[in-house]
Image (cartoon, rainbow, N blue to C red; front, side, top):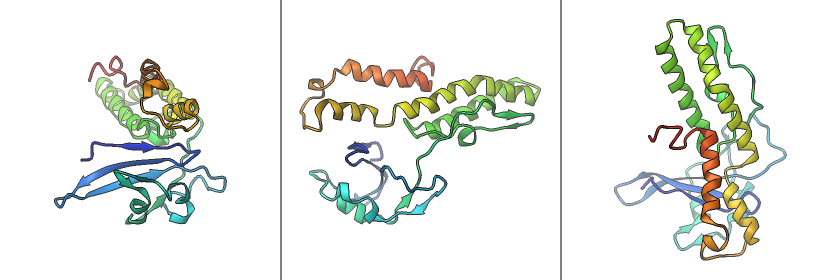
Length: 213
């Protein structure tokens, strides 16, 4: 349907994120999937390099669920691309007279919680609002930097400390990889909510920060 996302495994044992992005009339779907694997020999700026199945298939060779044949899904891919997942240290300035950095140009970050794109959208919203409120465009740019820089730099650093799979890795460590039937037998739901809420507060998309939108 395009509304479901499945995240399975961790980087240490094999990780996949799978979601449909288009529904066809014949009932089939266009599926996007991605796997994350640590590499020591990857060049950080090698963007959109063609990927090779043999470089990453091993952890998933026997992943056959009742609802998904992972090896076949990988083998049937129209194409595979390889991207480095990197960030940059936060900088102390985005605005230079009439020039302002925003989005990935200002704060490239690890993509936790969709924040790579989401924070760029929030940059654009903030800058649009401030340009409308200020007759002096340079003053608007400075106000934009003052409002957004510290918030987003904190997100960059938090994404390093709490990776996208933080909750899954926490459960993996608590169970030692053993199966379980109820998440409540492993970790309290209130603790899970607290982990999620802390990040929402930092990323500024809690209900309070967004005004309930």
